[in-house]
Length: 105
Image 1: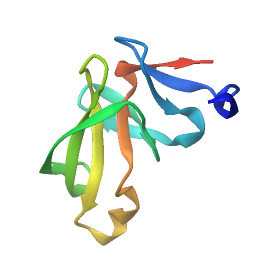
Image 2: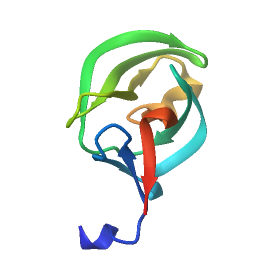
Image 3: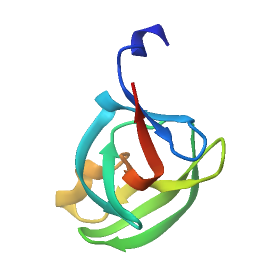
């Protein structure tokens, strides 16, 4: 992990488990169940829940809620499939709610 030493990361607020690197952050313009959220291209130390179809602000998706693998805190969701063509770029991306994470340097 030496190559990540200078890269800030986001950790679980509940247990301090590393979840995502700042360099994998794609957007700060998302909204989760508890408020503002970030989109990431990659996430680590998470467990994905059951796949389900969900109607969100921007359309219909197949998603899976994501949880911290250490403490089980629900963090957000992963886009598995977008049913609308203009939203396909979200597939495989992670939404993590800002209320659930902290930045660590």
